[in-house]
Image (cartoon, rainbow, N blue to C red; front, side):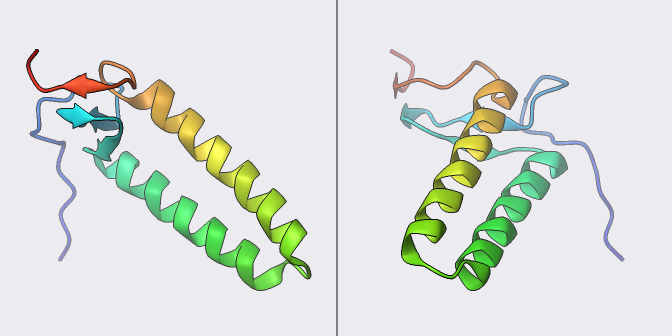
Length: 87
């Protein structure tokens, strides 16, 4: 049986991702973050399989990726940005 529990990674309520300590990026920290990531991967897979031309695949893929990055940006605890560890 799968039991879904709240994240214990220190992410504040309302946020789904935690920023990386070094560099640029974020990691899913809650169930909703992982669901968003899975939906992104499924959407990209469907786009690749169903679009008739490479141009259509690229355009739809860019739109899907932009939407996913927007979700990450607003749902990352502390926002996105370049990080140098604790500095």
